[in-house]
Amino acid sequence: DEKFCASHADLYYANIAGKIQGGYDMLSLGDQSACANRATRDLRYREIDGRCNHPKDYGSTMKPLKRYLKAHYQDAEGKDAPRIYSVMGDNYLPSPRLISFKLFPDIPKVANTSRWTMQFGQLIDHDITSAPVPTGPNGTIKCCGVKDMPKECFPISVPKEDTRFDTCMEFVRSQAAADEKGNQLYPREQLNAITSFVDGSAFYGSDLNATKRLRTEDGKGALLKTVVVNGFERLPNDTSARPGCLKSQRPESYCMVTGDRRANLHPGLSSAHLLFHLYHNFVVRSLAAAILNKRGQPYAPNNVEYFITNAPEYLKEKLFQEGRKVMGGIFQNIVFCDYLPIILGPGLIEKFKLGCTRRSKYNPYVDPRIANSFTAAAFRFGHTLVPNSFTINGKQEMLKDSFLIPDGTIYGFESLVQNFLTDGKSEAFDWFFSKSISEHLFETRTGPKGAIDLLSVNIQRARDHGIPAYYYWRRYYGLRRFTSFDDWGYETGKKFKQLYNHVNDVDLFVGGVFEPPVAGGVVGETFGHIIANQFADLKYGDAYYFLSKEYPQGFTDEEIAAIQEVTFNSIVCYSAKLQYVQDNTWFVPSESNPVRPCSVHPQFNAEVFAKNFDQPY
Ligand code: HEM
Ligand SMILES: [Ca+2]
Image 1 (cartoon, protein in one colour):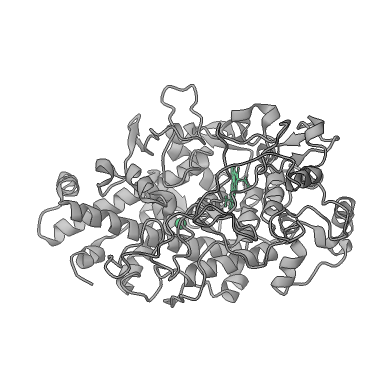
Image 2 (cartoon, rainbow, N blue to C red; image 1 turned 60 degrees about the horizontal axis):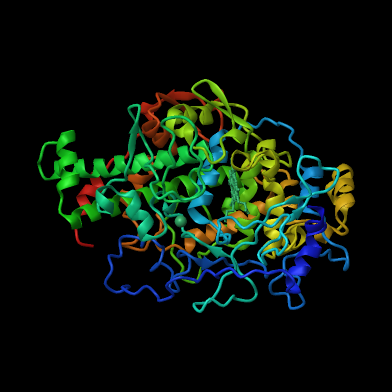
């Protein structure tokens, strides 16, 4: 309805003036008490919710995001309203959909990075960030064509010339952080619903109930639950009927539960979860076998299963926690020491001290929370790598037909994992985006007309969160500033000039994807700086960082060596039962990246962990 989406800016001002009704409960920050059992707890293991790590429990579940640059909100007091005005005064910023429509065409451009470079990025993201969006009494809040629009609405206006969508695209502002009494904090801050630490919360959950749902034996077992479909082990069935998943017509279709609520988004993502889910069970079984060996009890598979299920409760708990701790180390090693170097390139790794050759020192003054600019813009870099289709069991599947339907994982996990390693058609980092996300997101749920454009949403989200424009981020990191549209070159500059009134208006996400990749990396330098800055904070601000010298939070040198034997290659080989894998999983196979038998990649060896298992620390 044109009337309700004529201008997103007018709408917002109507909101501020109180013309639009609202009234949704503020999410409170949860239990604010500091880590209660700090003195008596078992220091070896992370709390599930991330508390008891940072002195103020920063980084734990349901804490506000932090900021590297202060918010640019645009109400009179600068504390709540989204960025909607040009720096030139009375002019509005262009509609995010107009930007996406004009600047982000779907032109396939082949890269030599593998699909896992895209997919592993999303998995990391879902371990460290999740900004909740409020829901109304009947589920999703509707903003378009609604008379008394809820105050959290900030819909995106669609330009007339764009016939793909109606005049209005749904958008709800992120949940505003509130104090314990439910009063909103000002300036407005957004929340992180999960632990910010790279700790495997995507696999284990960010609160105790979530973890309990995932563990065997009513939440007390050492293993993670699985179901068997056609003889293959798969993620457990979500019996709680939570939103975010659609079952298909296929008889064996079901919704999966993992440590993160978004896991059913598409089969690539649920398969990424399954890789680590299965490896946890392998780690725990290996550990149990090594403990039995050490005790002189001959190893046999049944013996191990018996030991795991019949051990006293405290021992099961310890086996689970030790498995989780090892997995946290394995995951961090892959994230920091394997994946980030190919995303950031050697320059930024060096500049932000993200190298992995030495033990590192924990610094309690480093704030391990997620920065708003990281999650609202920079780490969304992965959206440019998303393809339109993938192949499962020899059949091409369209991403647009798989949103929220995780069937591909149920029927073809092994094949999908293989396809993501070797398919050469992965997308490059650039300003071209697959139509699956720019025109068809959530079409499986809403039908074609209700679909949304993820890139419009990214731009609007950053404005919603008060993220300063691109210019200010380059200034913040001391990078060469763009002071004229011509700094982008004639062609691009001309396009930008037609949209924006001033160079200082260009949104961070837009400026970011128009940068060429840094030397030896995937992302451009502005995103690269924000991402490197964030991961340095997650490294030095995490007492449990796997190379940290803190003990017993960290590991011994021997344990680190055992963790570093396990690479992403080991995990795809084990969990997806592959025979062969290329040396570097982030690039498709080539002459310099040969495919070799999986047997050259060692699997987890639990011996040193079994040795230390019964030791007091
Ligand atoms: C098929 C692939 C993908 C789909 C369908 C997808 C979809 C989405 C959606 C719907 C959102 C929420 C947008 C909002 O309301 O603000 C989102 C957020 C996000 N995405 Fe993606 N995404 C994909 C891949 C990726 C990849 C590969 C990365 C990173 C490498 C990534 C990073 C992020 C981040 C950091 C957020 C913000 C999360 C938060 O804090 O709430 N995504 N994505
Ligand atoms: Ca986490």
